[in-house]
Image (cartoon, helix red, strand yellow):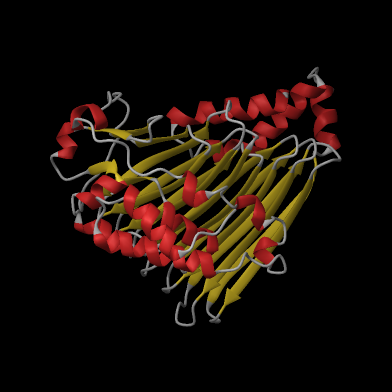
Length: 430
């Protein structure tokens, strides 16, 4: 990739984003400066031991990413039909516009779901205060690239004292070859929501490259259920960074399911930012062919009397690879915390490889923490037991894999559960 100078960046980007707010343009400009000056991550560092940074560079990024699509009448540009089983829905169009629909009764109470760039243009104050607050351009080289060049984004705001009985569905489908996306979610105090974030891409494209950032703020005494599904085609290179800040007496249940993409790297973390905060994070990855998954998770306990639990399951076949690094960090004054972490890997043949690296940074004594990891093939006695009862070998393997993943499936909304099961079934049959 050719590196543009700040001067060239100013000229090219200002032409494409001339209508953006000055504060956002300055933020983008500083981010690009940071990206240009930062070296690629060193493979010696443990988080890059299993992935080549070069795989996530975006080809001719400063030249290939377009600016906002031409303006169209708002009712045509934004509105799409809203299915009865969703509170709100968002969908990317091929021209990079974002169409949204929100239940009118709830929209009148202050719920906002719209294009992030449009939210900036309308001067929504919550956006300026939160955008980049958890993942700014100082986070890392690829996060700086995202801050500078994101060309599509979604903003979801749920005000205080609001309970959404039906989920919010975000359909983030990548049409173009290069995508730099951003998702900003703000949930007010004493509120509750379920969010389904479905990420997939055009299988007919010669190659897909994407860089995504997700920032989530969960207010005090609120409850978030977030499900992220990645099912990109095998010709994709996916890089995602997510941070979730959970307030006092709030809870966050998150599921990350990685099913596709030839190469994918995830950095997922939750910050427990108030007494009584709770986070449960569940990961699910199924790799076949030569897929490579590199997953890093963080549970950062900033306050005492907080709880975190992580369960990451991986199934691999053919010559797929997986590397998992999980960090639990508990600050000096954060006493009476509980933190648990488990990574289990199931290898269906002799070709795949799995790595597991648990990390603990505990700066106080009065805590309860544990971690564990397992990896290995299916227990032959399980296969023998099922075959002795008339089950064919292939069906026996499927039954064991489904049983291995079922606890994570149950955490997903019903509208998504069957879709993920079918994707797993396709991989097993393949």
